[in-house]
Every structure is written in structure tokens, then in C-alpha cells.
Image (cartoon, rainbow, N blue to C red; front, side, top):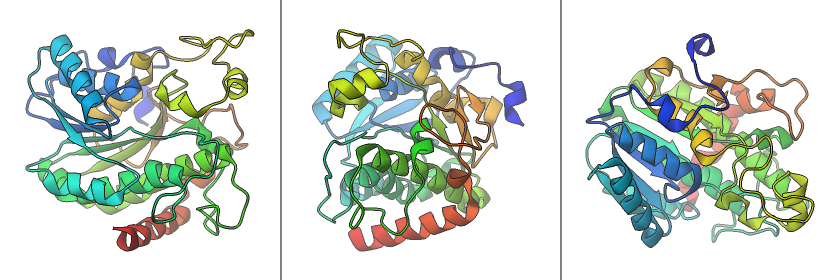
Length: 321
């Protein structure tokens, strides 16, 4: 078990994880790298010597983030590329424009708890579309670049919210059942883990590892769709409803990025694939999944479900691109 030799935990920061790691000559893509834990992930990778591309929807915001990374790390090898993960064609275009090998892909971007049912032009529920299908289109499109790198790593940010809901394969896009924001978000995060499990099995022969993770609770733009009551429910505001910078039990963005960076860059997890991590460790099984708990639900790592999810995703992308 890799966790027995990983000296990092919930309070570790991304910078600490790569303190002695040299990524010179490595190339990385971080989706959603303009803010939150995506920015901290990109900062840590660039600080360790990697060439980093921020794949973002807002290119102007991405350029501001890239300037910050250049200033803080002294690296000139920081770039910005446009991607709209709600549009699989945009993800495919970014993949097709990539030249040369890619050593690290961090599927970090996401949306959470949209209060109303929102669909893409393909009719897909938007959280599933962005959190799962958009990243799948990008990852699959970059397969040749990842394989050319030799020992490439795919890292996908999931969430403990997967414990809220398995994938409803009979109605993924809420065509028949009533829409519920947290159920949709939880389903998308379960699907992200299942896709990782399927990807790890299929790409192992190409020397590509794939792992998923829960970063912890972090106050970022991800919470922008939450109501005041919802923020209070998750402990993100005080009794007066004021937003807390770091709520009790939550992490700073630097701590939240640590597990992503560990999986993306640390030699401590070299060769580890198809796993779900939290707090820089392999997550334990959670026999009674429920909101607020830790660990990984059986439904998120079941190989039969992973195969079914793979089929659903590849079918959707073939029809939707």
C-alpha cells in the first residue's frame, strides 16, 4: 500500500509535497488553473520546474493567473489555453492543438450544486457534462500525447460528495426523475471516479497512470452557486451569515491542492493507478456512504460499473462531438 510510505496528510501543502521534486522537462496541463486549488496546483508544478498550461474558459483571467505564477516562481514556461468543458468540441480542439508529449494532466475544473436544472446544447445535465464528459473528451483526445511522455499521469479531482449519490445509469441527465442539485453533483463525482477506474485499466499498457481524489473542503469559486442557507449548512458562514475565509475543519487552497500535486508529481506514488485518495493517502472503504463522511463508496470503484460508465461516456462523446 502506498499510504504506508507517504509522509503527508490533511495539513500538508502543495509546496511541501514537491519540495524535493524536480519536474524540469515535464509538461503539465491544469484545467481550471486560474483560481482556487487549480491555481495552487499550477503554482506548485511550475515552482518544481514543469512547463504548465492553464486550460481555462476565461482566457483573460487565465493570463492574470499565469502572470502571478511567473512572478512567484520565476518560470517563463507558463501558458494559457482556452477550453469550455461544457462543450466537448472545445475540449477536442484543445487536445488536437497540443503538440509533443504531455506528462501531467490535472482534471481540476468543475461546477457544483447548480440550483436549477441546466443543460448543454446536447441536452446533457450540466454538472455531469462539465465534471465528467468535458474532462473525458480532453483526456481521451490527449491519449497520444500522454503515451508519448512515458510514465504520464492523469489526475482527476473528485469529491467526498460522491458519497451522496451513485450514478443513476437509467437517468443520468434527469430526464425523468426530479432534479436535485446535490444529487446531480454527487453523481458527477461518482462518475469521475468510475471513469478513472476504467481509464486506469485501459491505459496501463501505455504506461499511463490515472487516479482520482477528494481535495477536502476549501473556500473557492466552486461555492458560487450556493445559497446563504447552504453555505451555513456546510459551515462556510458564521451565525450571522458572514462568509468565512477558512471555515473550521476546512483547508486553505494550498492544503487543498496537496493531494492533486502528490498524484501529479511525487515519486512516492509512481506506478499507483486506479485509486481514490484523500488527505494525500489512499482512501479507506466507506461501508455506509453519506454526506459528511470520508472514504470511498463501493459504487465508485466497482469495475462493472466503471465499464458501464466508460461505455456511456464514449457513446455520448461519439454522438455529441
